Amino acid sequence: MAAPSGRRGVWGLTSLGARRRPGPWVRARGWSGPHGASGPRLMLGSSPALLQRLSRDLEVRPGFVSPEEEAALVRELEPQLRRQRYQREHWDQAIHGYRETEKSRWTAQSETILQRLRDIAFPPGVPQLSMVHVLDLDKTGFINPHVDSVKFCGDTIAGLCLLSGSVMRLLSEDNDTDRVDLLLQRRSVYILRGVARYQFSHQILREEESFFGGQKVPRDRRISIICRNLPPG
Image 1 (tube, rainbow, N blue to C red):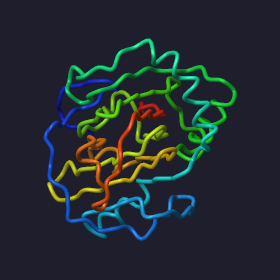
Image 2 (cartoon, helix red, strand yellow):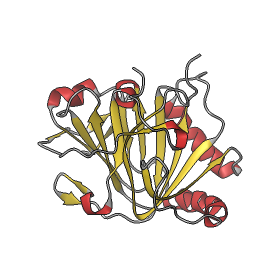
Image 3 (cartoon, rainbow, N blue to C red):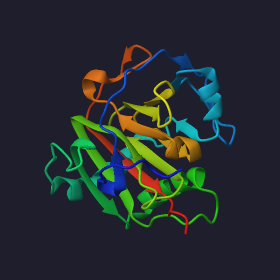
Image 4 (spheres, rainbow, N blue to C red):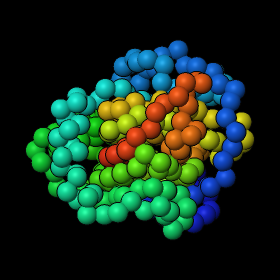
């Protein structure tokens, strides 16, 4: 399914700026990823059928990196990020309060961490984008609903979340009722594949909306390191 029409921003995002009201929610009974790894309740869906439908295309893994590994990644990224100011608004309105960069060369320690991420996100032999996307949101930053353009990346998006927890919301492109919230804890990984990547928009909720199952998820500065595979053809 192609991304819907709209204005294209960073990484070819198609902004869907309008916000929709959440709830009611069905809590997943823990989560099992494609490799059978179970975890705590990190997903809330609008129906059990929806959670089942997305069970192979949506994954959250808490505690993917250690505090020491997180610190090493941030130390490597800080010199490049500090040369930029936070931008209040992206030109297509998709992202607010952000800095970003792309990076292809990493220290040996960081490359080992990124390879772990690639190993769980992409099947062997799948060609990936050489440039890794780094997105730095300040405490008040947020990302509006969008679908990554099929022109710029393939069927899988994998992100490593550093420095702060947040809530990612997925909204169906086909109706106004199907939605899923993901609790992205600090140092966790999320993976969007197939249906979750193409047929649902995703967003990071702003500070005042950052709740998961009625519980406040405090926001702070958040760095995400995002790997993508190449589009087909």
